[in-house]
Amino acid sequence: MGFDSPSRRDVLQGTASAVVGAVGLSSVAAADARFDYLDPVFTNAPLSVYENVGSDRITILDERTGGRIFQGPEQHDGRDWWYVQFSGDSGGGPVTGWVLDYGLTASDFICPLSGTVTSTYWDTRDGGSRYHRAVDISTSPSGGGQVVAAREGSVVIPPYDDGGYGNWLILQHPNGWETWYGHLRDFEVVEGEYVDRGEVIAIEGATGVGGAHLDFSVHAPGGGKYRSYYDVGETTVAGTGVPRSFF
Ligand SMILES: [Zn+2]
Image (cartoon, rainbow, N blue to C red; front, side, top):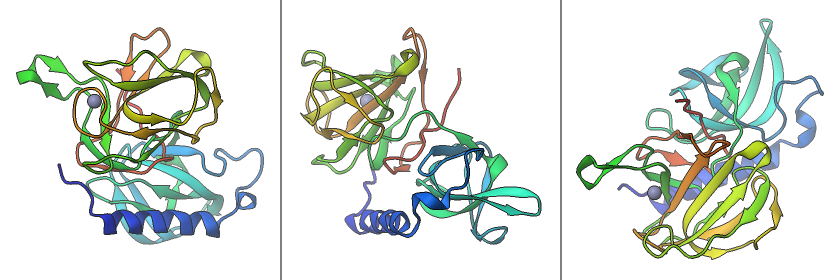
């Protein structure tokens, strides 16, 4: 499974809070800017990340790596640059730096839990007869991670699902989208409550079937389509954009 060591996660959280502390709302410019402070984004192509605007390359990220806008845009050689905190991927790892505007796409949803992806969308189980229509994220074998709302919406708490999701929760978002959260230990919200994107809604647990993890899925209006995004083993950072997969 390859859970992150505590030391590595501490470093990530330390980096994230240091960046938050260093950069305020005022650093994101004007109303016509393409993104705003803390907007969730993902890379739409393999993308170079630079320490400075246009120089000192740190790494090249894989396509569809999630991130959050922290600063920008800055102009360089006639192009817009953004300072972004990216979540982990198998190639580049969690990293914060400057990237070109055209390599970023806005994300509708943020990742709900910082952890490690233990199973991804369309993984096969039961010898291939059953497809996983969600992403599993785990913080540790004992769970306990804070689960945040992927987008603003209304809370629905369905009956306990003994043979599957255990304690689970649905957020109903504007325009008919839903996100589902399974295997929760505790709820931090109540039925009917309206929550903001990023608000803590529950605690990761091991209720229902399987070890401690969050089962997370995004449901399109009408319920007919699902989308997914992550590779197994990838590190996720709560609050960074969830990449889209269209099919
Ligand atoms: Zn799952």
